[in-house]
Length: 304
Image (cartoon, rainbow, N blue to C red):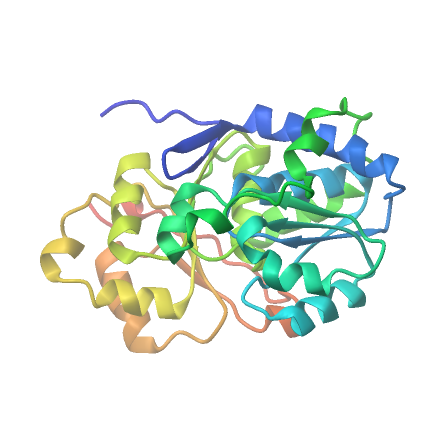
């Protein structure tokens, strides 16, 4: 089997190295800092699963600011409520979402637009003319290319990253290869993907969840870590038997299941199929993840 190339983020036919992505984020941090954004401030991120999501998140952390992912399914009043609640000092959004986002951005707050990439347009049936930023828009790419990186990030950014890795039982030196099957505005897919980016691993983005494609990506990229929901597991179990058995899934080391309680029958069926690689949690939005973590058992210790 060919060696898996790491240190990348992949989306459709596009890819970017982790080093390049982090460098672009550092340049964006300089530009955002020129706008007066600094420690404790917030940047609203209204993006689908795309490279710019990580760039904006990493840029915010470099400044000691907060990246605030906003559910892009929302209408203008819902998006406005989120942006006002966090007192966003800047907003980053995909071009196809501008019809709602532009109405939601508070007066005087800069809105940086990201072109909607082809794989996302295809997945959601977005017309080509909606994918390009308007001629008069502030463009995220201009912010990234017009500035040099600032000094190193403040120490305050690191404790969150260390805590997140500990919660999900990701060792500091562990190689992480993940597929982002959920939307990045949810914290768990975001953590997994950012862990892969920071540590030189691999993050493969799905524009939207597709069970058959997920199985193929696990085999092709020898995926080790996933974050899924009970609904996704149920969708995988509905795939035809010949599709379910087609791919080699033995690389999986840890699959975290969150969002809602997973029905026992679903978890049992998935464990029979994928092996003892699952961890579950729920209630994180309300109370945080406060229960002791249990390390995932590697499937090769359980199966010959």
